[in-house]
Image (cartoon, rainbow, N blue to C red; front, top):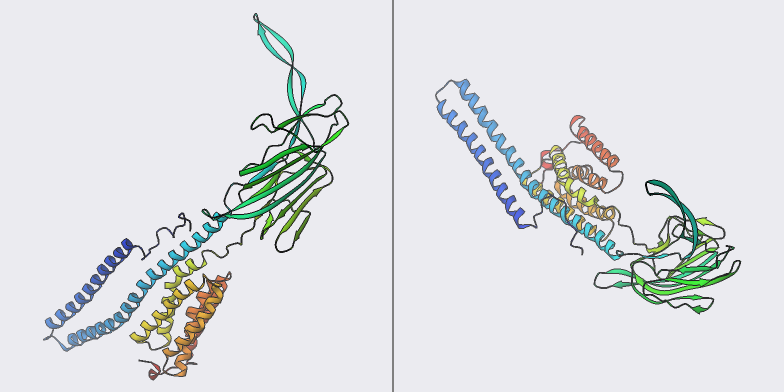
Length: 467
């Protein structure tokens, strides 16, 4: 796993001890502040009630109403405190899972990239070079006068190849330390050269070895079946004589190892009677440039790519073959879902409060089930498709949610709230049509609440609460 893979910057991660200690400290301070405010408000009401105990009955009634309101506030505050107690750890759980999942996705992308990393094997088309002397003139100053000087200089020109018949066989192995792919290229090419010049018969056949090779062996160049000997190390230019109108054939062959991509570059030359056959003895393989092969044959174990041009053609991009890795799709979907999950949880709990009589125990169990389902989704989506995983988890969630109601009508109301407030929103964040799905979920919630409270089509009774 690549060490460069990182989590989401700035996102809380409770697997880090420092962040865990900071979270505990801040939670303790917030809890103490909340307790102080509640106690201070209760003391204030008690002092006011004590100071006005001998006052008029109207004032006593006023204080009694304050006390009743305060008791109702405390009961509501208990529910709010419970939701906050469940929401805050749930948020940090989701942020931690989001960070871990992002780290896993980034590491997986880095691993795939590392498997095909490395410098490519690039073979350049050979060149047939010759020299001519060309007159030129320049001005200079002699004894204070401008003098024009006429001289000749030697310049290099290149002869177009009359034909190219190339075949390369590629085998793939794995570099165990780096877990990256390595190509073994067996290259054979026949080049036809025709001297179309009238007064030139001295040429150089320049055929450099491929760039990016980590091993090159059996490199040889033959002319009409006779091997040409290299005179200077590193010099791959071979002199030969060819009379006007005559033709000759050169063969270039080698075995090389290099990075997981092999390309053939024409170097801006015009290609005539050109045929390149690249046989990749591994799968999957694909052509490496925007120039589509004229023929592709595959038998499951190897793929043969053929480029063929009968007439002159200028090719800018190189031809080539590379290892086609499987694309990593839908990255970032689960981390985004986990970051928005606390908001979905609040909406679902609010929908339950507006639809059912809820107790402390029911809220705690429902929250535990919700975040447990998210935890299951996080790790199950690494094995199977996330949409399929959530479909299976939703069935479990709905079965468990049925127990929120003591009667069938209350259980059906809990199911409707769960579908509209939890199942559909999370499913909407997993598919491309998120906006449409979330809109349908919101509309379903609004219709349900209107039917439940305004029109009375679906009424519940206090005995429907499961204590």
